[in-house]
Image (cartoon, rainbow, N blue to C red; front, side):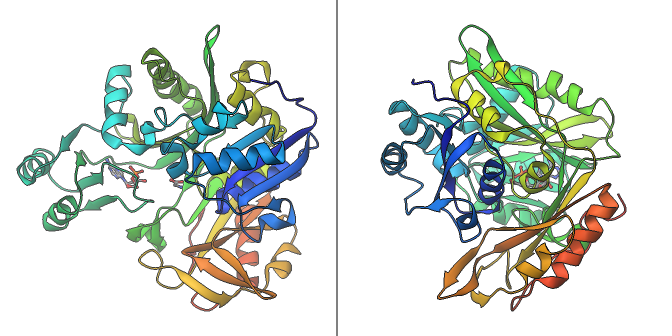
Length: 424
Ligand code: AMP
Ligand code: GLY
C-alpha cells in the first residue's frame, strides 16, 4: 500500500446519510484534508465536498472513482457496502480504506455470527438461540418469557428487531425472516460506545474508544412506538459510571477484536458496541461495523482531534502511532426531524425551509440525511430528513439550543421527538 502524506489528503466519503454528512463536515474542518469528495452524497455535503454519482454497493465503481480522483483515503459510511466487501475492493487497488473487510463486517451483517464471536471471546451479552423453524422459535420464546426479543439475523436497516410483550407479534416477526435470533430481554439504559480499531501483524489490535453517547431508537416520546434508525442522540453521558469506557474496552472491545484477529479476519474501522447497563452488569445488545447514526453527529461536533489522522491510522494499521481522540468539554445534542409516515414510509418532495435560520443560533448546525434538490428548492427525500445538532457547556444548554433550531426548520409532515436528552 502507498503511504499517503498525512498532511495533504484527498478523501472520498461514500454514503448519503446524516452520518456521512457529519463525517464530511468534520473532515472539511481538518486542515490536513486538502481535497474532499462524497459519493453519492447529499445537498448538505455539497457545501464542503465535491459530489459524484456512484453505486455505493459496487466495489468496482467505488474503487474506480477513488482511483480517478486520486483519493488517498476512502471512508465507507453505511453497513450494506461494508458487508458486501466494498472496502476490500478499494484496498485491492492499493488505496487506504476506512471500514472493515466484508468478512469482518459480519459482526454487524449476521447477529448469529456476532453471538458466536462474543461467546468465543467471553463477551457479556444476552443469552440467545439461533432459530430457523417455527418450533425452535416457540421453544426459545417460552424459555425466556416476555418481554420477547426477536431479531432478524441479517441487515434490516434498523427494522429487524422486535421487542414485545405480545407473543403473537414475536411469532409473526420470526415467521417473516429466514433465520432469527431469539434472546433474553435486557433491562437498563442503553449506551452506544464507538471505538476506532486497527490491526497489524507486529502490534496486533489497537482500540481507541470514543466517549459514550446515547441514542433514542423509538419513534415516539417516552420510548413509545416502533424502532427507528435513531431519532436523536447526545454525548457525553454525565450519569454513566466513570469507569464505563475502561470496563467496556477490557471486557468487550479488546476481546472482540482479538478474537476476530485470531480467526484470521482482523477488524479495522469503527466498532460500535450497543450496550445495555443492566441490573446484572454491562451487556452487549449489538455490534455495528460502522459509525452510528445519529450518534456520530454529536460526537463529531465535540471531537477535538483532527479526524483524518484517526481514520487514516485505522485504515492503514497504524492507529497506535496517532494520539488517541480527545473531545472538547461541554456537550452536544442532535434532534432528528423525520418525514410523515416514518418509520413505515419515507417522505419525498416536501420543501424544507429554515436551515439558515437554525444555523444562526449560537452553537447550532444542521446535518442533512434524506434531502434532495428540486430546482432551487431543498426537498425531503427519505425517512430521517435531517438532524439539528447543537453544542453547549452542558447537556441542558446544548439541548435547549438544538430545540431552538428545530423550531426554525419546517417541512410538511415533519415529526420529531420532544424528549431527546431531557432531564440529563
Ligand atoms: P439492535 O438492532 O440489536 O440494536 O436492536 C435494536 C434495539 O432493540 C436496541 O437498541 C434495543 O432498544 C432493543 N433491543 C435489542 N435487543 C434487546 C434485548 N435483548 N433486550 C431489550 N431490548 C433489546
Ligand atoms: N443509531 C443506531 C445505529 O446507527 O444503528
